[in-house]
Length: 236
Image (cartoon, rainbow, N blue to C red; front, side, top):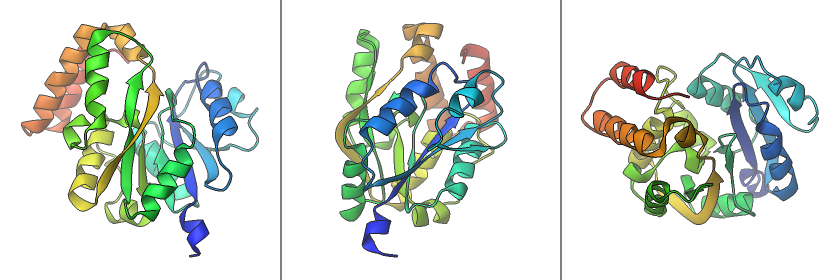
């Protein structure tokens, strides 16, 4: 594969009933992407019943595929469909910085096969300010899917992608394996992500439950146990 092709990026965005949000992200990406590095934008729909698919029809250059519901399933489907060497997984309410694709390609060129950006919420709540401050540090306990994630294809395939048996914490589980099997890096530029889930659940309450989930995962509790805790205490 030619060097220029090795630096190409496929952006993969899983969605489910995000008709009110996805257009804003796509407009933004199409405006700031660098065609020299971003090869394609792939939106993976998990069975939306709102206006998501109608909205996506208005973006002819964006590739839309369908899969079963489940973020891990959808992200794996997007990776399988993609045609680039670098895979960039992005939540539909997270906005990467200008030149994000240039930065990612540069990291891969410098032999960092996986990584993410640091993160900032679109809220000034003190709890969220403290939480986002930790995302600048390169430790797996500071990671989360809202920071976005890039990984080269051969490493993604080697690790068999996301674990489709996991319905929450799938990003963190995969990132944990990336830390064990690659040189993970943090790009010191900031993605902006929505605090909508915090507003819906209450900032203090949700942060408390996320801490408990981190502890349950660290202590080795099964994913089914963590899923039950999540479903009982957190509203999506």
